[in-house]
Length: 144
Image (cartoon, rainbow, N blue to C red; front, side, top):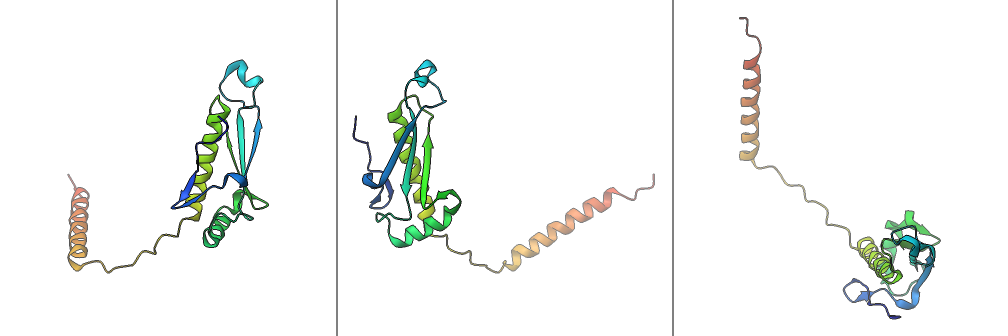
């Protein structure tokens, strides 16, 4: 069980390089009863985003900009302690890191092209607005 079930694909043919991943294990406060007192099941996965050669330069710049608040010296850290097993926590942390990098390095969405509202739609909106106004006006001013 030494080998990970990766490679963890970020996007396309780009995946997390196993050699650049730094793992740290510690005691978890999660589920497991007395088991958690004796085993290092919590996983912290660190990845040096600033120094990596695995990502294309454009992706790296984008990710560094978008994840600036989560970086410590150019290194991003992801922690997992949901599972009782260290192995499953390793899997969870690696998948979470890959998803985070995929989202952060994604190209920005295309800007919305502003279009003119069709005349018929605008006229229908104004007509319905006028009807609603008349309905509300009819509710007041009665002197019974």
